[in-house]
Figure 1: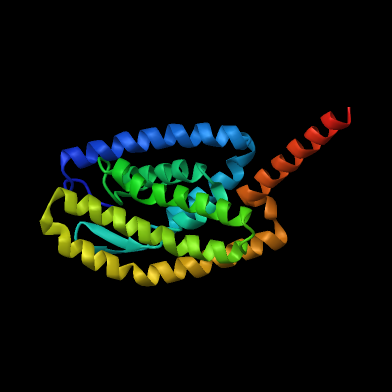
Figure 2: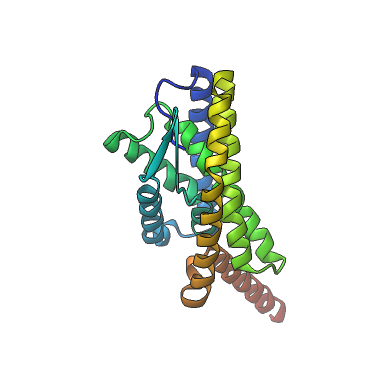
Amino acid sequence: MHISDGVLSVPVITAGWAVTIVFVIFSLWWSKKYFDIAEEIPKFSVMAGAFFVASLIHITIGPTCVHLIFNGLLGVILGPLAYLAMVIGLTLQALLLQHGGVTTIGINSLNVGLPAIICYLIFKKGHDKGISAPLLGAFCGGFAIVITVVLLSISLVTTGEQFMEVAKVAALAHIPIMLIEAAVTGSVVAYLLKVKPEMLPIATEDMDKEEELNVSKSAGDV
């Protein structure tokens, strides 16, 4: 999923950086609105490390590669901070290990970070409607890979039609990745709900809603 340097056109690279900068700023603003970022640092560090390690084991396919991503899992656990976590992970991989390009950090971050945010929103909306959290987690784990493959394909094909075959092969190669990540994400969500539900953003938001409701009731009583 890491696109190397020298593959994409300048407009695609520039667009990737521009969108990633906007998303990083937006995700920080969004996170400050709903969470205490200082309290999220330990969880953020663990999940960023998990993404860093998981995506190191890869199979190269032309200008890109296939590997575990766990962006759906990061989205479910970190919420909007997932985007920043993956930007940091991809930057360290590119600078320290030459895994992925430096110029393509922006587009690579967009390809894996946007699906994480989308899946967080799906997870949150589904939870609000009473859908099983583990089931939602499994769906998000697999769906994040689908979106990532679509974005990767767009990135490659926009640069040149010669990458069409590479995009097709990468899409097929990610089918087992999709199934694995669906199973892992669903299992992790089920486990966290039992032992440490506060690790899920939805738990924090539920507590905030309860506090607001209690404050409203207290004001009404007065």
